[in-house]
Length: 143
Length: 393
Image (cartoon, rainbow over all chains, first blue to last red; front, side):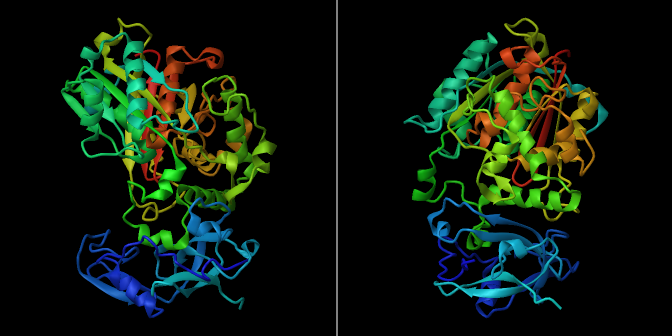
């Protein structure tokens, strides 16, 4: 499968805002970080000012292990957006991180037939043309 | 909701007029406002009321022509002055939620006759020439991954359901095939004249695996409108009323904060609607269930209580879902075969539910039209609103 991240301009038209800037800055350093509520310890994604569980604004950042498993996925065969048409087919997945939250991403570097719900994955960072790095996931080596 | 409130809302209003434009694949120079107005005027005429009788207006977003003050713009276009206006922005649940608000406004005396109208045009080229007018604020966490919008979300729901319960692609495809059979009796449906078998569905291209082309709704241009009025007025009008017996809503904006992605707020929405109506799933004689995707129908059927969680696959296999069948579902073809005019596309299910209750469905009239269950689903199972219509009050 051709990697959809080879020539990436994937963040085009995407505006990083004040609530998410730390997350994308960490990605640039190839670190996956998550917010943990300092009051109730709920780990959350996506980044935001208030804890969705207890509404506290006290927040700590946590460096995630980058490991998780495939919660569910789809092999995308059609996308009308010109930027993505050239990259078909690609795998979209919800990844359940070991720290708890679910994140939407891609699973790269494996044939779609090799993917299973529950398969262990780890983060890889994909350099994008605009200086940002995008977290995607690959299957972990079988133990 | 307390029992007192439920009793105060049940059967206090009815749908007495309806109109639906034949959907068009291309807008052909028409604007959403033009389509909305055309449907609205036809629905008022159909009800036997006059424009001056309409004192409430409920609208939802038109993706291709959105503006601030949208209700006022629609009202101005129609020459309406009202005591009540409302803008409902609940995605695919908008249409059913519009009815719930209109019924509440009538029951509480804020309006006596309410027009609910939705419509939109669809021009895919326009979507990518400029940023879509309703830009999702969390785009930075979807766009970098090529998130294919709702297609991908409902495909991932289907895969999880298959993984967990052994649901098959064939079972999902049967929903689309049965609805297409009903659409052959609806001359306005986009896919009228084009029957479809389960094998045809499975042979159509995979869009987002495991969902095929014919399991995915087709956006189009069109508009629908209904007129609700109070119980005392409803009895003396042109058509037999479709009584609004119950409605219920449940909204959970983050599908991944709930305990189980596959157990949706439809559970609570349907329970509330049935409680108000004083009936249950077994009393339902026809269902109109939001069908943006086959997987959506399957999960909503389970959560509304027509079968147990995980048994949606065997349920759709065991029942004839066509208008002539033992579980008539989306009898106008549903959005899958009729078409989905924008965010208010769910209104075709409302119109068809009312049409069947009124006995006006012609060649596709169901045998028993006592109780209709109509359900709208927005986002990724995040906004849910159920309605119960009855032939008797």
